[in-house]
Structure formats: C-alpha cells, structure tokens
Image 1 (tube, rainbow over the protein chains, first blue to last red):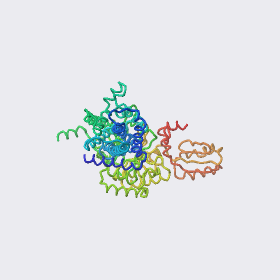
Image 2: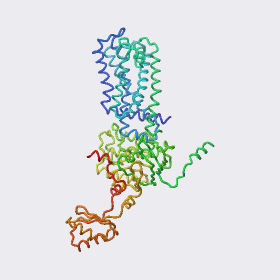
Image 3: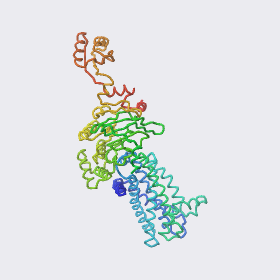
Image 4: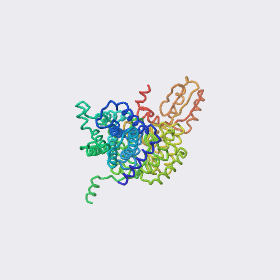
Length: 255
Length: 338
C-alpha cells in the first residue's frame, strides 16, 4: 500500500513536471476554455432564454462540467503515447505497484482540472458571473467537480489503453463526450429540446452534475442532483477504474 | 503448513541442473492463430552474453517479453536469476533491467529526471535515486545533456539514456532488445563497448539482434531463432563450423582462366571448386599452407592472380544455410522494397 502511494506520487509528479514544457497542453487547459466561455456568452447567449438566470450565470456551471470531462483527454492521449513509445513496457518491467501508472496519471489530472476550473471561474467572474450561495456550498461544488472529473479520467485511461493511436483516442473521446455534454442541461434548458432528447438529457449524468453545480453555486433547486452527482461519479469510478487496471495488467502479461 | 508442502509437491519443481542465470524450457506463446513462440529453449551462463539472432517477426521480442514478465507464456518454464518468471514475477522485476526496442524515455523530462524517476520506482529514496542518476549520466557521457529535456537528444543519446535507465538498480541480468537498431556506426560501436564493459563486471546479458556482426562480436553463445523456434545454437565458431570449413577465395586477373584454375586446384579442395565472375571459391582440405600451395600451383599453371585469401564463413552464410533466407530482412520487407 505504501508502495502504491509512493509510486503513484512519482508518476503524478512526472506528468506534472512536463506540463510547463509542453505549452500546447497548457493552452488546452487555459486559453481554450476561456475562448469557449466567451463564444457561448457573446455569440449564443443572446439567443438562449434561461428563465431566472442571466446566461453567464446559467452557462458557467455547465461549461465547467463539460470542461472537466474533457480534462481526462490528457490521460487518454498520454497513456497511448506511453504505450507506443515503450514507456509502459519499461514501467511494467519495474517492481512498482501495478495500478500506480494509471493512478498517477489520473491524480495529475486532478491538478490540471483544478487549474482549468480556477481559470474558468475567474473568467466567469470577470464577465459577470456571481455566486449566490454560502462558502461551504461553493466549496462543495468544487469538490463535486473534481470528483466527477477524476471519475471521468478513468474512463479516458481505459480508452487510452484500448485504442491504436493518440489520434483515435482523441477522435473517439470527442465523439463520445461531445454529444453527452451537449444533450444535457449544460448549455440550454432541457425543456427547450425535442421530447426524445429531453428524455435522454434527464437521465444523462452530465445533466445531474450540472444541476448539482447550479444548486451549489446559484442556489437552484437541488432535488436529488447533489447526491445523484456523487453517486454517478462513484459508479463511473467503480466500473472504469477496475476495467482500466485490468486492461493494464492484461497488457502487462496477465499479472 | 501442510498445504504448502502439498503445493510444493504438486508443482514438482524441477531442480536446476546447472547454475544457468537464464533458463527457458519449452516456452510457447500464441497470438490468436499465430504461434509467436513454438517451444523455445534457451540458456545463458552467469556473466555471459546470449545472442538471440533472427529476422523481424521471428519471435525475438516475444521471447524477451516472456522472460521479463511482461507477457505470460501459454506453456513452458522460465527461470531468471534463480526466480520463476511466472510465479515470482514481482521479485524478479527487482533483479532485471530491460532496454526495449524503442528508447523508452520521457521526452519531456530531462535525463536526470528520467533516471531519478526510474530509481524511485525501483523503491530508492529520492536523494539516492538522484545520486545514482548522476553517476549513470556521467558514465554514459550524458552529464552535460542531463539537465535538458530528452526531446532534444540524438538517437544515440536516447539509446544511452534508455540503457542507463535499465541499469539504475544495478540488475544482475540485463535484457536488450535490438539495442543498436537505427544507430549510426559510431554510436553502435560505443554501445557495444558499454555492453562489453557491463559483461566484464559480471552482468548476464540477453541480447536480440538482426545484425550478424553484432551477435558475432558480443555474444558468447548465439541462438538462431526463426518462426518462433530455435533452429540452431552454439558459439559463433560452432555455428560457422556447421556450415563448413574455411574457404579459399581467388580473384583472377583473367576470368576466362577459371576452368584452368578449378582443374589446377581440385586436388586441394574438399568439394569441387566453384567459380563466378572471375572469383574462384573452394573449401580447402587443410587450412595450413593452403595459400602458399595454391599460389605455387597457379604460378606453375601460368595463371595471373589479383587477390587471394582464406575466408571463414560468416554468420550470414550460417543463416542462409539454416533457414534458406537471409537474416537481415524479413521476407515482408524484401517484398516491400521491390
């Protein structure tokens, strides 16, 4: 167990140390989400009606949830590169804890996710977003975001170990995550959608997490969304973490 | 306790009959329909180099992967450094170093960071890992580059860093999968010298290669592998002897005299001499004095000679004789090049 913790930290450190040296990655965490916030608020914002809230207030919790789901891309692409460059073979030949490579990656994602959440919140505050809840609720919101993002990183870890190239990790992830985030309450109120999409949006975990964020940051009615968001995150984690580790072990010769 | 004893009895572990550091017996590995390893036996004595020689796709890398615990064989026994590669995989990983076919370095980390990371993953404290990283960089002539990200390294530098990473924990057994593929001749020679130094210090090395000169120079014993099977093994000399004795090669000034030469030299030859484009080749009955005798006979017959020499058969000849195809390239690659 001690070995798992220390090996995980070594791998997490490795993935964070390289960040400032890969400026394209840093841009993906900072400039890109800011660009999306500005585009949505100023291009679509005027045309979307969000009763009870200004569009900025409505959008920020939603776009942050979308953004955090995409945070795991770094894991998918990075793991796939490691696989092809022989680094995974090297790690597998070392006497290290087996889940540490994946646990370290996903832990590093938590740090980068935190960075991009902070960047987005600051951007939001500048263009008119405001919290209308207590400090405790705001912090709980951050907690749910990071938990959900962490769970999603394991989905991407599995993806990265399954596909043939970083490019296909990228496009497959996009195809899967993009519709999921859009057919949810993240960008528009669900009741403005056609009925079939409403049905999907209502059971979509993204809607539940976004609703939880609006409850915790804007004081919107929570319903079951807060516990639902926590439960969804734990279920995703419970399903995908073992699958990803099993895949890693299998590729490691079944050990 | 009883269960333990029963377990042990049921496993009927065969006692090691010798002190081989690497022992592989009857290893089979399938990938779907393909038999990547088809009953492979290998053995390397302590402090020696075992060369695994074969073309692309022969099963060399799969063999390395099962020996380094990366892959579980479908059948067979593997013992490395006294540990079973299947049952004792975790402990075995502490005693082996692996440098794979690709220089497995993190391009975004510096040389020091790469090696320190590996050291810490072997369980070394940070300070000790860093110290060891510096030592290795010094040894591999990378001290200066050690503070720069590996992205800017040349192919040779990456390979050296990769080999250094395999040596972090001072493993008694080292697996090198095509360590010099893609290197320029100078870097190749430097890497050969490094490997020779490691062996002189007592490291046991298993090395795969598709280069005959590399196996010839580094390996104490060579196992020739093709289609997942070891088709020959022995020392370089033993393998060459299997192909036949030494050949006398004579380059004629006038190619038209080849028939005369074949007739003149026939009494010296073990088999009928062979000629092509003014070059006569014959396997001599007796090595000693054969050049002098040949020159005398040719002089008497009034034949002009440009060049004459005794040639040992090369491993190329060995491979061609054993497999019916050349070693340097697989059939597929030759196909592609046409």
